Length: 115
Length: 114
Image (cartoon, rainbow over all chains, first blue to last red; front, top):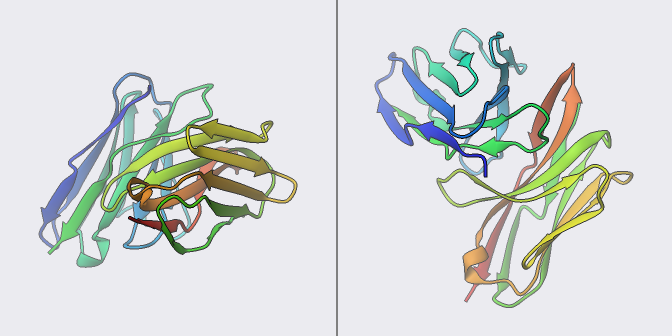
């Protein structure tokens, strides 16, 4: 089956610093990747959708200058949380799909804690 | 705008019971609906995917149905086990502004008691 690998699984960073999260499709070419955020005991909220080689499309209320998304290749997308604040602490999950497939494959998530 | 809700929000049942989790969506123009399981602090495990043209899918003790016209999907778990304890999420795939998106429900936290 299609595998999506997300790294790191956990990260702690200081307030004001930036942190990068990687999402890789290991055995398929991901034409589209999605980034989600999940606060404790809440569902997944879509942050942005990115197509390879294009700028990401952000959902309403998500700051594109704070959450930088790069999808420069068909196997890698990155989410950079810039100038992190404690309120950015959350669980971030990526998913990917390839052209012609209707199913989305999810990474294992990244627990970000900003102290 | 697609909205997905799940009822109940939490459920606690004794081992061996059959149970039904409900998922409702407001926009019936979906491409598929997918059920996931999420263990605490973990990512998502895909359970079942139902295409818009299908009525149900089965995998082991799990059966998911889809009724697009009424905007509903159900996940049936037979003979529940303590290992089934997790949060179950449904996600509807629909097209918005030219982009396919997966909108997740609020989740049902299931606890199966031994």
